[in-house]
Length: 184
Image (tube, rainbow, N blue to C red):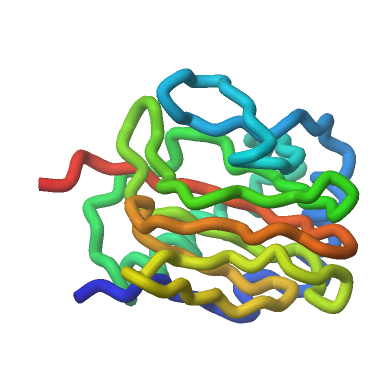
């Protein structure tokens, strides 16, 4: 059986995380959308977060290279999916307590090439916020992933998961999806 999730501490150094966070803080944020039956739909009962696409510009190419390496490591170690690459720009996410930031239960299905491996990279130290747990629905219970600045978590995109409401502070993270042919 495949693991629900895999994680790594130290995939990025503190200096790299600082550099990445500074870059992302300069991006223009939009209301987070969800891909339900209507693409581009927004509903704060389902998702309340601010997002920005991280485009492959010269100043962040090092991040894209590292992200690909981290994805390969997770896949080789835990999943062995037939992966083809990143079909979408990674997203910078900001969850704020003032906005009741959260994302209810969902799967990371894509509109184009099938997403196979989802990844999250934690940018904020957990002492700066409360709540905002990445959780997986495992039958009648849910399990939370480890928290910590720089923790990278990978999981099959078909796993049902959520980000619980943030109750104080602000949490920043990056999510990315690796695509491949449909599962058979």
